[in-house]
Length: 241
Image (cartoon, rainbow, N blue to C red):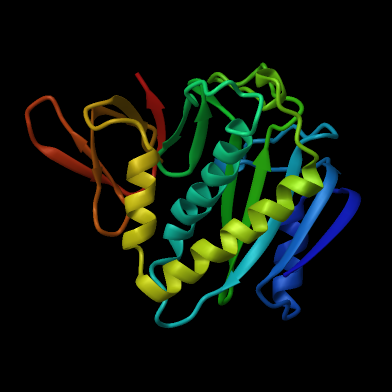
C-alpha cells in the first residue's frame, strides 16, 4: 500500500484516472489537502476546504471479480467501519452512535450526509474517489450535511486515511475471495431498517417512493411500492422521507 499526498490538485479522481492509464497498480492512494475541481455524483461540485479528506484509489478488475459497481458498497462498508471506530473511542461515554448507511454509498451521521463516494472507469480499472467531512461540512446542499468535528471529533486526515486504506484492503480481499455476500450482509447490518420510507430520484428525472426492502443479490436497491409490488433500482439518488 502506497499513499501519496499533495498540497493541492484539481481532483484526486482525475489524477488517479491519469495514473490508471499509465499502468499504476492497485494499492496506490492519492490524497490532497485541498482540491479545487472535486466532483460528486452526477457532476456535482464538491467543496474542499483544508481539514477534510479528499482521496482516490483504484482497483484493477479481474475476470472473477463481482460486478464493478458493487465496489461502491464495499467502499461504504469500509468507511463506515472506520468512522464508527472513531466515534466509539474513549471519551464517548458509551453513547449510541447515530451512524447508518444509505444506498448506494452514503454515510449518514445523525441523519446528515458525512461523505461522498464516486466511482469512475478507466479500462480495466475502477477509480474510487472518497471525500469525508472531517473538519468542515457544506451548508448549501439539497440535503443535510455534517462533519465529525460537529460531533466533537477532529481526526487528522492522514491518520484517517491510513486506517481507511487498511479497512478497504481487508474488504477488497473478502470481496474477491468470498464474493459480494459478506459485503452485502455488512451493508444491510449497518443500513437503515427495513420498512424505512425512501424516495428514489431516477436518472430520467422521475421519482419513486417506497419502503426499503433490502438489496438484491447484485446489490441493487429493492423498494416495496404502495400497491405491494417491489421494484429493483440500479441507479438513483435516494433520500429518506
